[in-house]
Image (cartoon, rainbow, N blue to C red; front, side, top):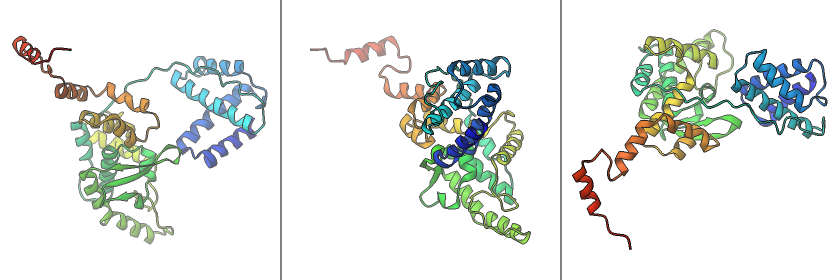
Length: 319
């Protein structure tokens, strides 16, 4: 089983191009599955085994329904790959329904809190300039944190105001940047980034980095490193400790809809393959719905009885 899982994980990385985060999740879930099967091979497990595995995850391991659903997805994908590689003739988990998870509404920052977070990196220190640019780009263009730290210098066009983000499945999309983001990036590229590279080169750096955002050692900033910085700035701005990179992405989408952006445009900017994934933001964008109603309905704004009668009298009779 371990050899089959290793080959499958290699397939995910080389042929499917999954992100490191997704790759780690598959590895973790399939390792649990192999342990549950207790030494049995990949051609021997059945649909009943998979169902018992899901029950074990919930009852013994304390996993949520969402985590169990993710594990089932990993086993299903693994089973499909086993058939493709002729390591078994059927996909035992193919018809099993996913555990019902519900879908929590995304938690977003207010525009005031988002503005306070953007201003948290103070001063002209090179790292403050870098972090200000990263926060502006994350919130201003709705990038995922992995997309942010993986960005190359040539993926950003300040003249056109466009960032080229590479998301899940190596799919590339073009996203506009705000004037604030462009200014912050221009400040970062005007000197501080080169200063960090020069300093790192004097300390033994041999390979010039291609990544847009780097550390004081001239290396790519990691997801964990940025998350740590974000927590510090959230604390400085007086925001909840659970402020996360993804909360900024949620805020980007919700604030766009509040401002009147159409759902298809938001879908394209977020890089969602399915419009249903984007539609969740309509449930938290009550301000946008109210604005659309006030703008479009002839009787919006709780009109008086006389105003309603006047409006009704102007309508043409049918026929």
